[in-house]
Length: 173
Image 1 (cartoon, rainbow, N blue to C red):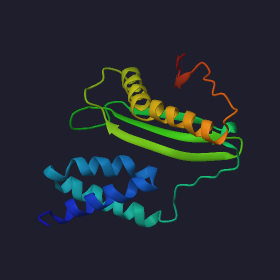
Image 2 (cartoon, rainbow, N blue to C red):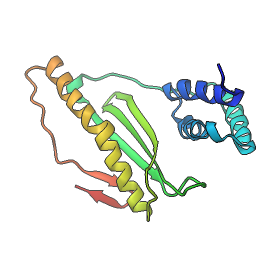
Image 3 (cartoon, rainbow, N blue to C red):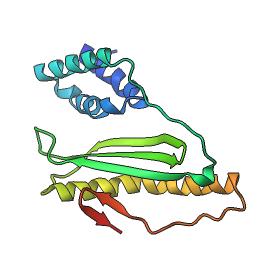
C-alpha cells in the first residue's frame, strides 16, 4: 500500500526467488535488507538482477528420486563469504541440505544469512556458518529423517556414523 516501487519489487522477489533459484538468493536478501535505506546503487543492482533473471529464465532447481529411503542420506553443505558486506564487513553464511542416494538428488532446504558479528578470519566465518547450518537446518532435519526411515522401513535400525565435516582444508570429526 504505502511502499515505494523498489520496495514492492524487492518484496516480491524476496518471496518468489528462494522457491527455486538458489543462484539469486544472496542478491535478493541483500536488496531486501536495504529497502529502508534505498539508494541509486540499489536501483542499479535491482536493474542488474532483473536483467539477469530475464536472461536466465530457463534456469530452475532440479531433483530426481530413484532410491528407497533406507538407501539415502542427508548431506549438509555450507560455506561463508568472509567480510563480504561492503558497508559493515560482516560475513554471510550459506547452507544447503540435500537428500542423496545412488540415484537420488533432492534439495530439501537452504539458507543465506548475514552473520551477526564481524569475523576476524575466513576460518572463523566458516565455523560460524557450520554452526548455524547444523543448528538451524541439519540437526532438526536429522530427527525428521530418522522418523521417515522408521515409517517406511520399520525393521531398519537407524545408525549414525562418525560425522565428518570438511571446510576447505579444515576437517572437524
